[in-house]
Amino acid sequence: MIEHKYQKLVFAFFMALIMSCIMSFVISAFNVGLHSQIVQVWLKAWAFAFVVAFPTIMVVAPIVQKLVSLVIKQE
Image (cartoon, rainbow, N blue to C red; front, side, top):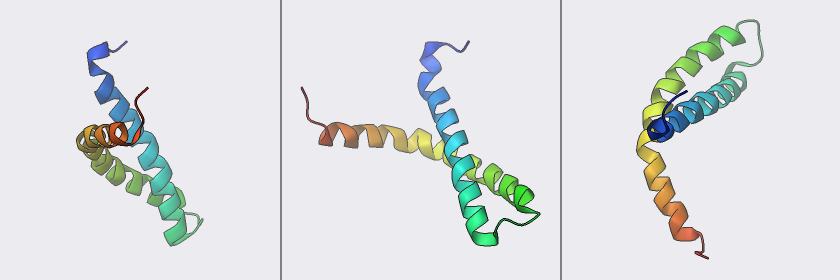
């Protein structure tokens, strides 16, 4: 198992992996349709999307956490 101190990194990895997977498929299917080469088109798009998504999440996540704390009422 991975140590707890890497929790944010592991979270960002899986969030980027899953979101880039879903979004790259939806956008690929929307742009080129569901044809015989969709898997190849999607996997290429997914690889590129993940490379962008992972560092983006690492940078954006702390900003989003601060924004959420501003709009959530404290108990």
